[in-house]
Picture 1 (cartoon, rainbow, N blue to C red):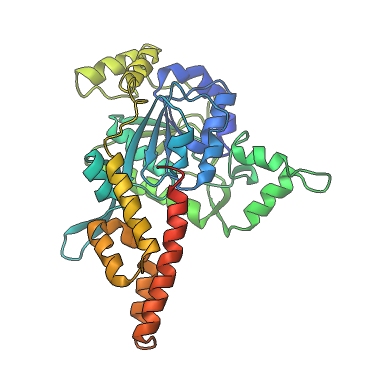
Picture 2: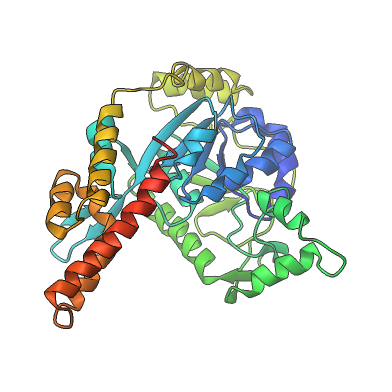
Amino acid sequence: MLISAGPGLTESLDWIARYQHQFFILACDTALKPLLRAGIRPHGIHILDAQKQTLLHFLNEDLSDMVIFADLVCHPALPLHLAPAGWVFSSTARLIYRPDGSTEELKTPGTDLLESMCGAQGKLQSGGSVATSAFDLLRFLGFRTIYFAGQDLAWTFRQLHALNTHHYERWNFMVSRTLSLETINERVMQKRDLVPVPSVDGKSIPGDFILSLYRSWFEQSIESLKHEDPVKCINLSRSGSQIEGMQNLRIENPDALPEMAKNPAMTATDSTSAANASRVTNGTNAELRTELLEAFKDARKRDESNTPLLQSIYQSLLDLLYGEATATEAEVVWQRYPELRALIRRTEVYISRNQEKLSEERASSVYRTNLKKSLTQFLRFINRYI
């Protein structure tokens, strides 16, 4: 089951709590707090956002029996401050299709360096939201029937998120005699260009361009998988936008039973998955959680083998900062660590576009000034984490 933090999640919580032991539950980071408040403990949590504010989704929560699946772009403060049972990292696969039929993969900057240190990293496709990446993750984990909750992709009840998310915790401190939660929600909503979209109940509901992009990604993915690797998608929400290709289970009957007996959540493609499917179908996933956590029992032991390389990178940047910081000196560092060229990429583009206007001396001065500024900010940032 993939659980997002759309407004419709609030109504689905009782149903999820009733049948939670029949599912492997993967929660998007924003949905964690509403689930825990309802007594639902997911097996895994997926993170895609690179902002430090992602920490707010986990503040003061016990993660000891959960695994965090995170994109490589997640903020480095998260592994430092969070203590789940284990971490699984991946990168986002970006494929460009050429007119000649060939494809090119655009890697997240730093992936090559990371793989040289830690080995090959898995890749997930993404439609831009954490839920789209989480859907691809569940496919790779072997699930061929996936239940969705909180996947509204619309402004259900004129709200963007379910109750008890960290957004409401923050907004509660803003509430006053002249400022209500409804007003705060409405102000957020009015900043978006709203358009009506079809809802699961046959009516229309406010949506916007961004949410429609996510919905289109799901619809195209479900359709494209039909002929290659079909995935049955079941929507538990009784509100939100209509997502073509998803079966709406609870529209007519809010208490409809999950289809576990005749269509297990995990397709038995081999003996191992068959055993897991049997346990899920029989009404308990306790053993499945135990097996999941077993793989991470030694994960808390910090690997120091890459420390010399990290220190070498840090020292190279430090020497560059306190040296002349010329383009020639910098090029030596970029050749050794190509990913670090991102620190000066914008300046290089600026100089290239304005080379007819800039004298050689002026271009060199702009390069040194911006490089030192960029290095100062970067070293101050990474000094907290290495």
